Amino acid sequence: MSTIKTHIIIAGGGTGGHIFPAVAIAQGLEKRLGSNLELLFVGAKGRMEMEKVPALGYKIEGLEVAGFQRSFSTKNLILPFKIIKSIFQAFRIIRNFKPKLAVGVGGYASGPMLFVAAICGVPIVIQEQNSYPGITNKILSRWAKRIFVAYDGLDVFFDKEKIQFFGNPIRKDIAGILPSKESASRFFKLNSNKKTILIIGGSLGARTLNQSVEPFLKQIEEQNYQLIWQTGKLYFDAIQNRVGDKTDNGIITTEFLMRMDMAYAAADIIISRAGALSISELCIIGKPVIFVPSPNVSEDHQTKNAMALVDKNAAILVKDGEAKEKLLPIAFDLLKNETSMVNLSAQISKLAKPTASEDIVNGIISLIK
Image (cartoon, rainbow, N blue to C red; front, side, top):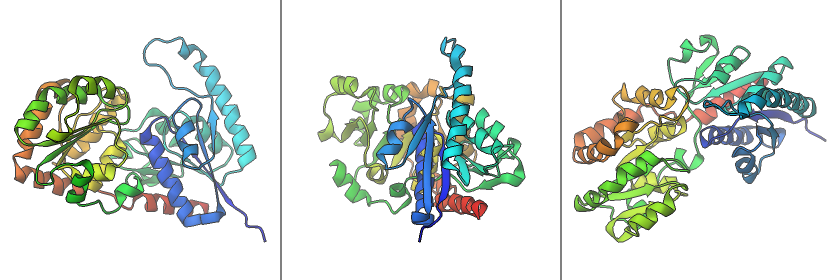
């Protein structure tokens, strides 16, 4: 006896900040619907989702869509043609796949795919990760049945009746119980009795964070602190050539952290960019955080993300332009102030949304039913 499957599209990508929530939603849907579910991801050709999503075992189709270049570029001249082509591709996907619902997580592909789904009568929902939504989600919101958000105050941009404040879905290994500081320190060959700084700038790295920490390596050693330093792929080789191997001095330099759960567990304080997904993870982790928002993002949304926590005394913010002089001294001061560390931990933990994935999946399934 054959079972009629529920077909759902998840559209978007471009960065890990869009892809990881998409995958978390997919995993939650699989857990609830099992073999009755047929999932299809839709991404933008040439973007990272076209590689990452199939590697996780999911089917994906690519649209020709691309983003508008903010600086002058001849690529902008062919952009209208790419958008038109992507709309025709989205119509073909709808016709062939026949989805019951489409989920948009942001990114280039989300716009044309959800627009076409909506005009074809397919219910659409949006998962907005940031405290300040991008223009695509603002436009799509008029057709959305539900808008799942991670920050309060978004009724300024979206219909209040459609908003559900669930938080951002995060990776399963982070949402669970972290290892102990002792076992995490052993994993990195560090001393669990010493205070440890964790610096994370994303998979490609963050130049400002790297430039801010390198001049202070000697002070980190002299003050008997330890460092787990994710340099990012773009900067690792050059930093290794300049700095050398300082593992014996408690300084771990790595291109990429495969075991973020271990890194979070080993850390006493964390220095990070302020991407929406990173913030959601750090609220779950519940450790003192210093944010250095990237200035190279649309609408300066990382600063807005960080300020949503800073205004609640749940984090410290250092401006990108001031980080080289101020970031590590502020970190040293924080490590010496146990009261501030405890207060920051308590406040950021209050903002955690550990059931975000389950809540979003429940919201999606309620629409299908």
